[in-house]
Length: 139
Image 1 (tube, helix red, strand yellow):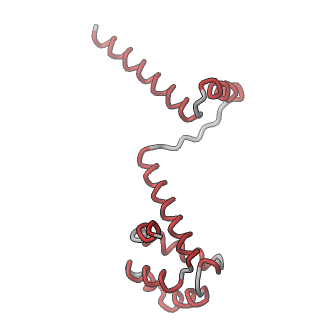
Image 2 (cartoon, one colour):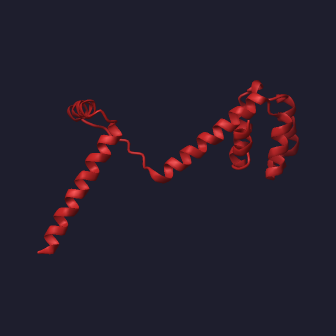
Image 3 (cartoon, rainbow, N blue to C red):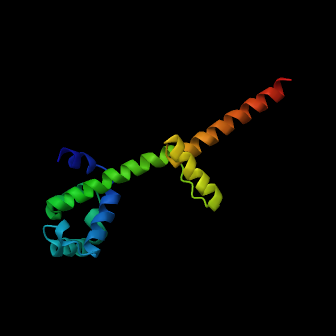
């Protein structure tokens, strides 16, 4: 449970959004008292989650043990995705059938992932290009 406590100490906007979605989706098992939670949010409006202290108090009062685990898991996943987005870029491409078959054959032969192969080919090509450009400018 120590992990859950650590992850619940930030991203209060994400926590609020998750709580609201759980209520809207009628996820009874995420709450000790779903009707009470919904009623409190309706009564307080935007003030229900005005400060981190309010989010913490609401979470302690209404979320079940399962709800805490789910929320903690969501926050850990969100953090991992955020970090991944900082160091990687997503590439969505369509390949011809012939190129896709060649890609599949290469990854099987080299025993690496498609991502590893594509990155390797790009970086090798970039290195060749840099060497060629350097040799042209050295003349």
